Image (cartoon, rainbow, N blue to C red; front, side, top):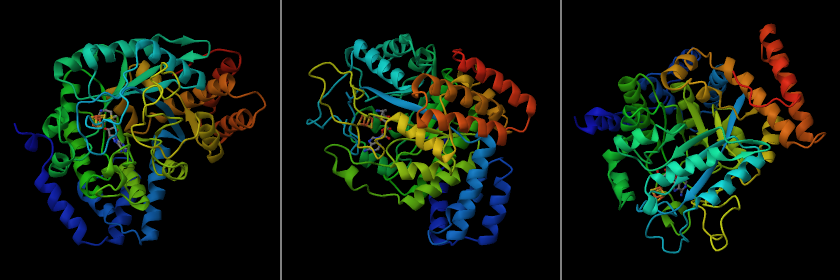
Length: 474
Ligand code: SAM
Ligand code: SF4
C-alpha cells in the first residue's frame, strides 16, 4: 500500500485548503459547531474547516472559539499544566534541515555529544531545580555507539537519585527508527516517543530537507506506525509551523491523527505546536517562508483543542512568556520551562565543551521557579505528575479515561500532590511562591473539587506530603 493511500489523502487536503481560502466563515454554523464541541467528542473534518475559516477581524467569533477551547481543556484536564525540561544530549547530525542550527553543513557549530558523566550532571542539575520529567533530544546521528548511546543515556538519567528526588519519566524526541530498533527502544521505560513531521506538504518538505535519512518524507510519515507496531504505547506528533501554510498543516496533521486512530484504536498522546525561531547560521529560520501570526497561532491551538480534546498539546519555550500565558487558556496541557537547547546547556559540559550554540533561540528565558510563580498567579496548578505512565495507564487505556473526561480525577489530585512536593522541597519557606502556592492548593480543593470524600482523601495525602512522604500518585 502506498503512503499516500495509507496515511494522508493529499488531493483531498489540497481541495479542502482551496475551499478554506475561497469561502468566508458562516457565523451560525460556527456557533453550532462550538456548541457541539462542548460535548467533548471532538470534531469532524468539515467542522474543523468551518472553524479555520474564522477571519482575523471576526473578533466576536474568535472570542467564542477561545472560550469554548478553555471550557474543553478545563473539563478534560482541569486547570493543571504539566511541566518538563528538554535535555539535549548531542547536536551531531547527518541531516540537512535548512531551518536548524544542527544541520550537517553548519561548520560554525561546535559539535558535542555529552558523555554519560555529563548526562548524569545535567540530570542532577535539573533534579535540583525541581524537575521530574525530561524530554531527551538529539540530532540525528549518534556517533560510533549508535542507538546504544540513547539507551545508555536513558539508564544514566533514571539512575540519578538525589536527596530531592529523581527523574520519574523520560520522553524522547530522537530520529525515526526502523521497527526492529523501536522494539529495542520499547524495552526501556520511556513515556512518549515524539517526532514532528515538520511539514506535511511534500514539495516543501523536499525543498527543506536536502540530505540524510530525513530527506525521505515517507519514511518519516510512517514512523508512528512502526513505533506502535513495535510495541510503544504513546506517540507524539507535531508540525514546525512556518514551513508551509498552517491551514494545510492542520488538515494534514488531523488526517494523520485519524489514520492512527483507525489503525491502532488510539490517536497520538500529544501534539506539539512549535513555531520556527531564529537558529544559528540559518537564513531561512530568520525569515520563515510561511510565518504564522500570533492570532493564527492562537486559533491553531484552540481548534486543535476542540478537534482532539483527549490529546495533550505541548507548548515549548520557543514562545514568549506572554504568548504562553495566552495559550494556556486556549488548551495547552504541557509546557517546558527553564529550557536550554544546547547539549550541556544546564551547565554540565566538560571544559572545552562549554561553547556550543542553541538549536534555536528561545522566547521564554525564565527559570523554572519564575514560570511556576507566574502560573500560580494565573491560577494554574503546576504539575510534575507521572502517575498514568507509572500505573500503566498508557495508550488506549489512557484514552478510555481521557475521552469521557475522567482523567481529570487522576490529573487534579496528582497535580496537587506533585506541586505540594515541589513547594516543600524547592520553595523557600515563607517565600511568596511557598505561600501563594499553598493557598492555590486550598482554593482548588474548595472551589474545583465537588466531591467531599475526594477532597478529604486528597487532604490526607497532602498532610503526608507535608510530613515528608514523597511520590504519592493515584
Ligand atoms: N533531530 C530530530 C528531528 O529532527 O526530529 C529530533 C530533535 S530536533 C532537535 C527537534 C525539533 O526541533 C525538530 O523536529 C524541529 O521541529 C525543531 N526545530 C528545528 N529547528 C528549529 C527552529 N529553527 N525553530 C524551532 N524549532 C526548530
Ligand atoms: Fe538534524 Fe533534527 Fe536539526 Fe534536522 S531538525 S538538522 S534532523 S537536529
